[in-house]
Image 1 (cartoon, rainbow, N blue to C red):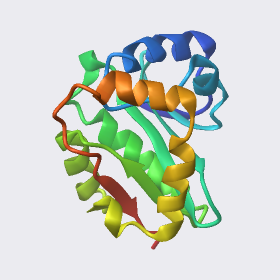
Image 2 (image 1 turned 135 degrees about the vertical axis):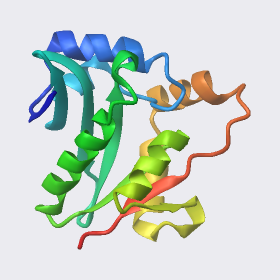
Image 3 (image 1 turned 30 degrees about the vertical axis):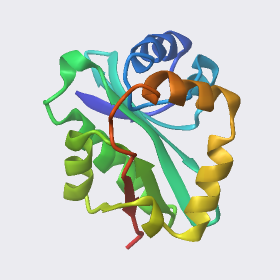
Image 4 (image 1 turned 180 degrees about the horizontal axis):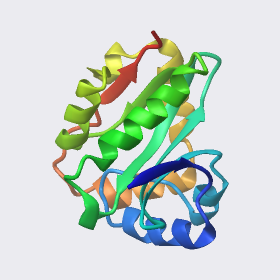
Length: 165
């Protein structure tokens, strides 16, 4: 397995889009967005994309890891951990703090092991709270959120916060 920093091909984006639609924990990304994200890390196995991570700068001091996804057939092999280490090291060079959200206990545990603080919404800096409000006011994201979460008893998303060193 190797990790490359590069954009997803259209074929890879379509493949991952179909899989992401099935997961309750990733919302609001179109194929067009997946292809156009610039800060993308792709995990490859024999040349085939098996997982990826995307981050975007959201303010002067912060970036958000929008997506961390590994194909189900390749889970529990440390691939997410490898991708997050690669992405975090790259982001560290920018001087940005990192923010992400997940309610997947496996992901939250991996974030803790990679020096992320797990925080509740009320514990986030004001800059991130403002971002979350603006980010959420998108018709597609709202419809995806309700489609995936309206009838679930899942707890709200905890947030992973990683402060630059």
